[in-house]
Length: 363
Image 1: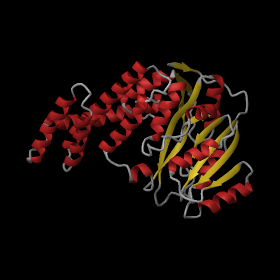
Image 2: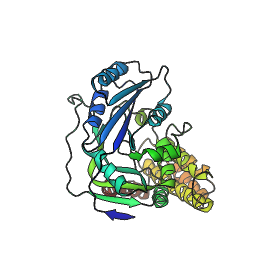
Image 3: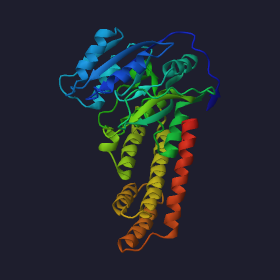
């Protein structure tokens, strides 16, 4: 890992902003405006409308008619988000490319900062930074959040395989998504998102990118704004701790692919590390759930997840110990002091991890 001072952007590279859209007409103008307002880079915006049933296509075509930097691709039939991502990415003509959901926003100056890092470090194929969420509410007028200024910007650069090792050690996805900018050459080299992973395709994509390229992070300023609302796909369709862990495991299984440009022993070692991390998290989460009334079903599913990974050393014992706690809870016994303490410690650790992630991009 290297920590560097930022270097100025001496060129004006072209950046393609791909905006997949499905029934987000009310958000689309703000998303596109946040891209067109970027300074220091040349921008092209490609809106890919996935057969929306609202006014999205009309809104998109209206913006394209008024702004030559905007083009629109209209799907005649709904193809789903993965196909829509891949369609847009395949049309990028810029040196760099970013995928921006139609309900998210790019922070002012973000694309120039990302381009400067990659222009100065030609082995870096993917850059991310700090995302900040914002929430729909009755008094929210759907205007972009205030600009965040930060004077203490720095760059972190990891060798790709070291970044993969960190992700496997934590069993986590460090990236939300809208804050990522990639080299178009990276996208062309690793191919599209995996259609068989609609729930965790982003994590799998970052792992594939890091297997071939170094990874950079911009520390300090906000790079993107992530909108949290009731229509977010991960909230409405993919809820549940055990389900989330399984989706992450599915993404980490890309390390089983012999086409990944890493030695076989390294791939096996990293996958084993990810499995252990996921099982530790499942165990801690289940104990925390048992300390809360009415969370037995979640704990049972987490125990099943642990049991399914029987190749992880100590997992049978871990699953059996957890089953004993579940059985006691089913008999009406209150969670012991140990489980309550674990739940409290877990909540405090989550706070520390969040702060660490915000500062370093790793948690």
